[in-house]
Image (cartoon, rainbow, N blue to C red; front, side):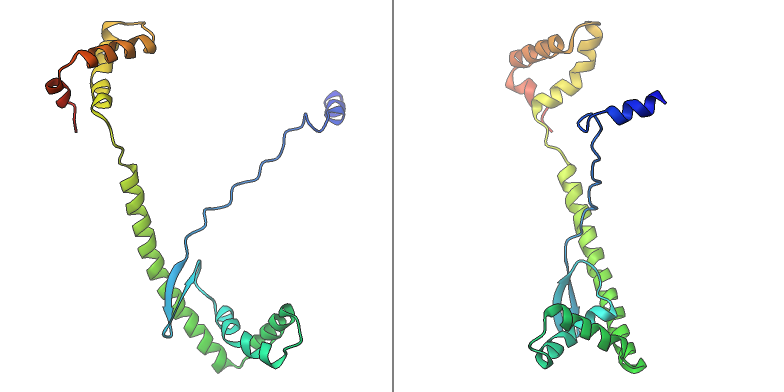
Length: 171
């Protein structure tokens, strides 16, 4: 077909570029207190995360001449070989860590929402308040006038006002 031929003959610069989707906004790290230790995390640690954190150093010490990725593999194999009692201990710790993370994260989210609300309050000047209050009536008086002309008239009125009259627009 003609459309297929046109698409095939189009140069690479004619084809639209694919745009990457922006990554989700990463959440800030949260301070978690677990078993008397405090650490920061962007998400709650799982049982395997906690085991790796505990056992990695011991596996590294037992195998000083192997690469870190091999130490990690051995640590994961050891986790998979854990008995039900040892595994449940890490699962319980992970559940406690998740509860602590969720509580700390809720506090962070609440604080972030409060900060965003405070930032959304915009500071307006007396002149801005004056323009907001008088623009509609000025526009009604001079129907069809360009905004540039209307704003020029408002600016002239503002300059002609006394300080007492301007004070009425302070908020």
